[in-house]
Length: 351
Image 1 (cartoon, helix red, strand yellow):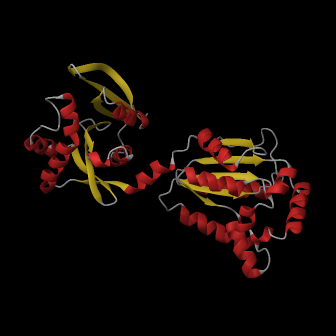
Image 2 (cartoon, helix red, strand yellow; image 1 turned 60 degrees about the vertical axis):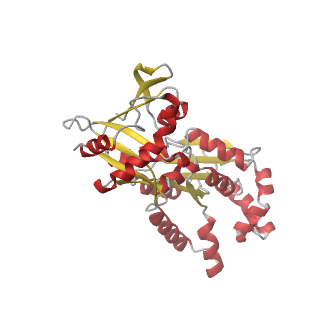
């Protein structure tokens, strides 16, 4: 589970940037006032230990979800050791899941932040800021009594960016963060949650075969390849199914069978090299990101594999783009099949 920690002074735009970042990534937003405001409402005053307890409960439950990660916003006083202790403990919680930590520090001048302190979005989400005179004075006081901006070179974290967003819109700032850390698109992660691989049973081979023919027929009609899976016999599919060290899986999306993939080892004594062949998605479900999700799921099924191999058609740029997006690179020589079709090999090395 990954964590994006957005730090910055009061009204710098942490929550608003987080809202925009949530729209374009698979990260959910947990801004700090989500716990502060309910406690203030119920108790009529700040209860630090309770806010910390509720906050930690959210963290503990969220790391069990299938989201890529969480965006958390926090106003950190860099001159207080206890603040560093909290940030480090939070980082350790997410790193323990195998996740990646991203640190964003936003800075903007006080005049601009006082303007933002009165924006509709801020006041709608933070009731404690609605007394504008009190809120403005608190912002000025915090600036004067705490060091809310890091010093040059003070941040020790690997994945860190400092952004002066005085003149940046929240949308531009969010896009800058996404691009800097190369965060995947929301649509990709949505599809990853919707897609799963289910092993094909022997009695399901006829349905598997019908799906294979329907998926590959457009390519056969285009290239007239005599080795096309569209025209191979069901007996050949049965023989491939019976290979001990390879397996067929239906690609499931929202509970429906939308394609299939065969993965495994050609050499029963070699467990580090695996092949993907064939992989297909029914025509009506193509170009939705299902193939990408299926390949990533295949990696999870055989986690000990360090080298994945596959073959595709050079003249199909969409297929080449899919495999390259998954990290595969072209290897070897081109293999002409006929005047209009050439096969090429791809490999993905994970070490």
